[in-house]
Image (cartoon, rainbow, N blue to C red):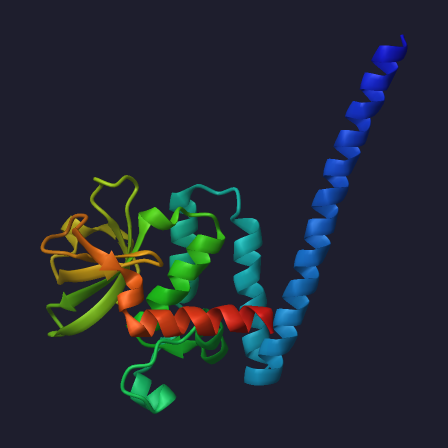
Length: 222
């Protein structure tokens, strides 16, 4: 009986430790959320704190969801924000805001919508290799635009998350967009069609991206 008792005790301790680990992780997350909400309220006002909490709630609640569910939740949340040009909002020609800055102002341009969706989906566990920030030409607007592309597999037709169109659609159905190039936190591609594109180097070649990544990392540790 002793080996069985020892084994049973060991199993009980393992289950107990696992449960305590979950409780501890949840408590730490709640403390982090409270700190973030306080910071956002201090810098941007009470409404910004509520948006930050809603954002973290999505990240907590969608951890075990499918990729499709995560795409829908994140796209729907950020598409409630307002489009405002960089010149009006930041007094700069081309400024890439961090997700915290975007949430704080509840406004930004197409890059800011796309960047916030990208980082949020990464935090939700979506594979970085499935996500591309993609520069396109918006035909109807006759101007450059940025969207987020999601590739289920390397050869899949991507799904497009866009602030101009709230519905997530396959790229083949977005005839109003002409792809130019795409990138993620690791690589840079040229896109001559609505598929995967040709790898041309590291995303570090994009100064805006390098600067944004550093600012976001610093903001997270403050």
